[in-house]
Image 1 (cartoon, rainbow, N blue to C red):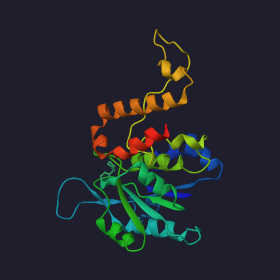
Image 2: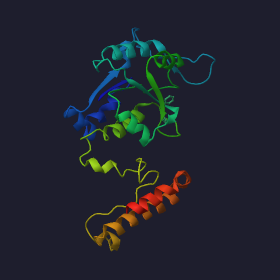
Image 3: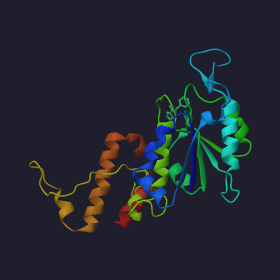
Image 4: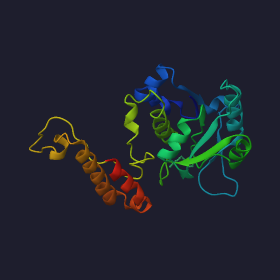
Length: 249
Ligand SMILES: O=C(OCc1ccccc1)c1cn[nH]c1
């Protein structure tokens, strides 16, 4: 997979050189290219923003630098002529979910356009929306100063799903929100050695070696935690899925 990021703060994307994503890049599973938007400005001050038409607070990112940058990135594509998916982080986007992470992890090429200020001139989204699959995506209901942190979040969520990137291929089968048996439930509690820590032991069932009981206990704990922290997910859950899960245990 190829990932391009166009930003006025390239140094903000340094964390993509370390850990999980860093290793995937070193193994050649991921080709991540970070571009400085200001490379495509031509005035003395490398201007990327201006005042909003119609007035109002803040500044808007100008369309010209984005147009030149995105044309350059798209033209550099040797991805078998496949065009990239354009991912635009914004509070006004559709929610970023595990389901969307899975969908994006199956694409050969993603281009992220993190904005600063009040956002990017709408005409950029329209211009590229005519020829590309453009996704405006929110990582949550809050406003940040820029889209770079959302890009780090989305790239990590996508990269860990690439085959061979996450050590144990099974690990994301039971992820919270992963489609399938545990869909729509939060992860239950986890424990590891030592068997006793500050007078606190381990739930007996986990030491029983009885896999059926362990699976049922984990499902019940996941349910309990979901009711407590995310009752909204319970309404959405499909009771038949629980019955199916019960039969599987
Ligand atoms: O703040 C965010 O992106 C930066 C941004 C982009 C456009 C206009 C204002 C701010 C964001 C919050 N949830 N998901 C994304």
